[in-house]
Image (cartoon, rainbow, N blue to C red; front, side, top):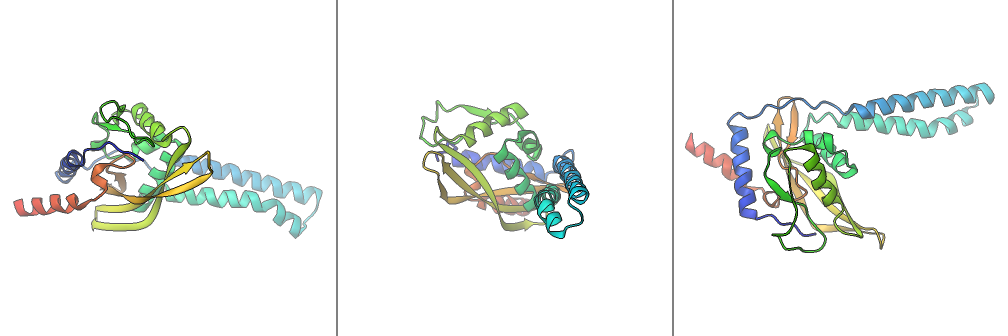
Length: 244
């Protein structure tokens, strides 16, 4: 996978965004939990109740028949409730998990809302590719609209004709301060022709910051040059402390 970030420029931009957040630009409209999972859970619960009622009516109160009938809907119901609970974005890990889940499945509207307001601007980013291209000719996307953000992620997920990209949030969370944390995210590629999945040799260190009662993704790219190493975060914090 090839990325086209100038690391120094990416870090300068990241430092500028972080300073704005530290200066008090830390308000955003609440995103809330993903109610789609709740409505689907309600639907799965209705199916479960209907199945149990049908089995009880036609077969009778047979424990085996009830268990066999209820197993599938119960599993779906529980999974949907867990997904709903994890979409609360009230912790750094839940925020990254929800962002990754939505970015992977193309739910770009919610993923875009999880970005910091500072990242939803007209700065252009090049989507990664499986074959190296001339950086000058690579198509770039801004995140100032949902449509442009969606176009970036469509291009990013489809790395090449036979390769697809997906992300996986790990449980590794590092709190730099109570309102600023880093969560590790694994980058995977799947070769659809060979049915082979390959884990790349590095992880993304996603920076997340607090906005009220919720958390936000600091950078919505797959792999920003600033997130290869996040030592610049401490440099910004130390510089501000020295200037006080």
